[in-house]
Image 1 (cartoon, one colour):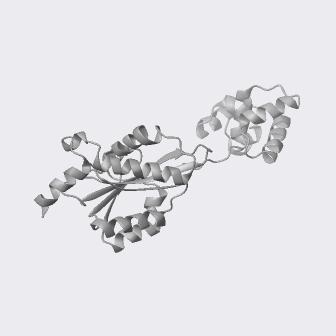
Image 2: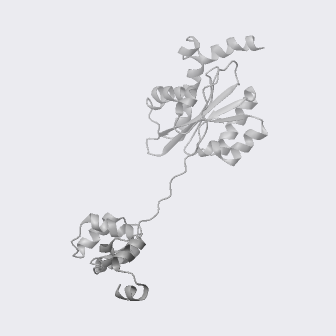
Image 3: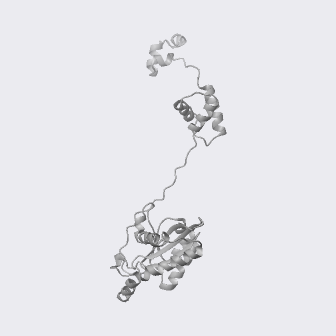
Amino acid sequence: MTGLKQDFNYSERQACKLLGMDRSSYRYDPKPDQNEKLREELIELGKQKPRYGYRFLHELLKRRGWKVNHKRLYRLYRQENLAVRRLKRKRLMRAAVPMAQLQRANQEWALDFVMDGLATGRALRVLTIVDGYTRECLAMEVDSCLSSRRVTRVLEWIIGQRGAPETLRCDNGPEFTSRHFLVWCEERKIRLVHIQPGRPMQNGRVESFNGRLRYECLNANWFLSIGQAKQKIESWREEYNRERPHSSLGYLTPAEFAGRSAPLLS
């Protein structure tokens, strides 16, 4: 600052005022980095274990004889950008889809999957398809794995029996969002309604059916094989459609309700 006064005729006070700097800041003499060795060892460990967080690195340093506060270590960890960047999971956004007011059979079919297991521990999946108006269970496909092509094959079989639906309502599972399934619906001019993620009651009719399936069939039986599971589940489906009264249908069975509705619609 002496040279500054000789060359420009400015004192230290005037120069600091002109620069907007506090005089104590100008006079501050930085101390040597006391964390230099710790910083170097932390960087070395971070390169060796890039997936370790600062707490794990803290433990490794303690085993090497370092006695350091975890807050101090975290500060150095952040300064050296050792944290692995975590990508935020993309959330699927869909508009709300309220339950439709149905007036006829085949107006809307609801699809969903139910998970269970065999006595051997092998996984068991059940594809359930329900007519939203008559509450009939149109089909239940049972296997350990069900692809989107298997889903469309079952739908083709039902369509051959009773005609095509106007709408299919389902969740956002991979079987229902695959390119094959979307193209299949488009080719047959079937409207596809995906419910919002995390809103199962937007597909409440099939969810209600799945609850009955689990309570009355899956939880009441011990399946030893896929073949046995198919037989018992299909037997329960027939009983559900033809013998089990349904409260929302005025305690008619789905088959009785469908039979009474057919003359009104013809």
